Image 1 (cartoon, rainbow, N blue to C red):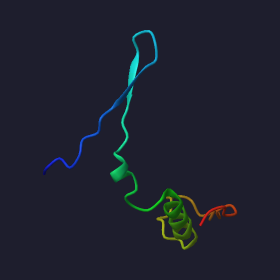
Image 2 (image 1 turned 60 degrees about the vertical axis):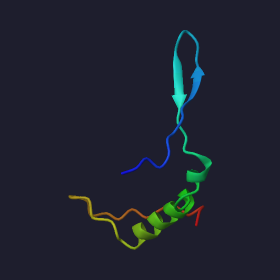
Image 3 (image 1 turned 90 degrees about the vertical axis):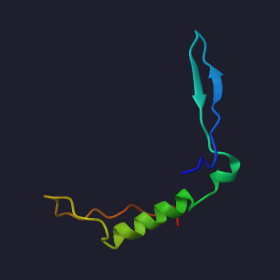
Length: 70
């Protein structure tokens, strides 16, 4: 498999010889796929439809709080 792109870490010195790097995808790759709001709304729909497997030993259904998304 060929490497499509390589992330370049942005270094930041926090002092005392402690440096951290932050890795972010390129702008071209950031907007791929559904937004987080769409994913949360889909998960809420799936929960209300009972699409998730039951937790062993649990019988109570816990409804979602009022939606502020989707």
